[in-house]
Image (cartoon, rainbow, N blue to C red; front, side):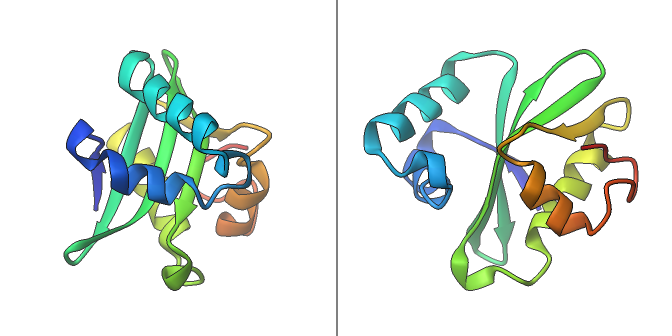
Length: 123
């Protein structure tokens, strides 16, 4: 289940974000978290399975579009369809918005969805 990011989950979010190639540097990671904390149009969601947060998806919101800027799954849960589930839940929670990918997340989202046209998700 996707849950909206709260400051109390900052360490968990930073840990999940650090699995992304461009977020390895601590300074970059802190700047990314700060952007989600301060920018009104940037939203971060954590994916909870049982009692643990195992995934993260970050979007930039526009009127009718959500651009996936960050998406990450704990390595011990990869290959289980968590990435696909997060994208689909995001689309279901925002039925009036088109979900699309930025250049950084496009390969991952395409891999999760197997095709660009699956569901109402556009990359």
